[in-house]
Length: 337
Image 1: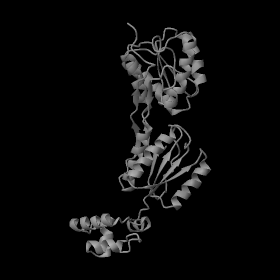
Image 2: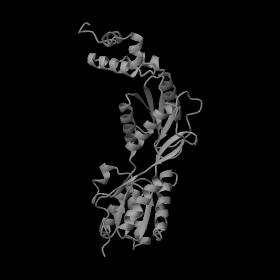
Image 3: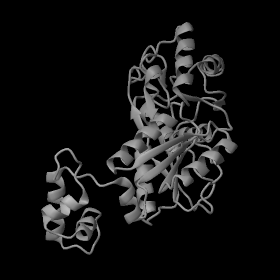
Image 4: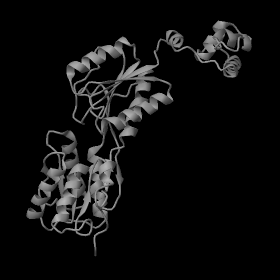
């Protein structure tokens, strides 16, 4: 063999003492090859440094070993972790990834969808920009689709979302365990499923603990400004509060700022829990925020693994709610006795 020439399947077959057809079957995992022959072929390929041609493999297997990631949130802090987790899983599975950003535009989304199908992708992951259900893309598509972060409206599709009800329960249980009893809740817009789910989780956990919420849930926007405004409302209506669960880290940071201006000490007087674990904010707030992490990279990785299963004909329909976790920092501490 010419040392300057990349090794071919012919070289592998010659080294292993088998036919080219047998070598090809062994390398591509076909069942018609005996185990000892497969081992001999794979060893020969490793010794020669042979790498199968991707196009040839796709023609043999009927798969392109390529998947599409179609997102509406490629610049958002929620979409990016999901994409990173999915890409890690695809890399481990030696799948090439094509990323398309629809920027929230349904026409652009359809264009990207046609482009990905023209590239003969084996499957798609569709990443949303919120946990609100989105229209299904799966009908009449020739490849499986898995939805991440934003579930499909069709329950027959495969969707992965964070368990926001469970995440809010974690926040309240942590505060109750720390000795807090007068707990308020401030969150985002009622039009967001995440805000509604987190409010439901707070209410359920308080009921489990035999406690009543301090005041009604305050719905607003996902911003520090709203956190400051809501803090003023809470301190006027429920001055006795000793803890607050905020629907986002932005809201929590605004609340902490307003509390400090009023002379309320965090966490001595009022414990604060945020949501999202947006580290650039949560770790820089004074004091750093205890918060709920939606584990979005793991969610993306799990979605990718289930896409592999769907490609193999083992789809898992339904909305799968992935557990959140509590990240404890300095904004919560046991209540003074």
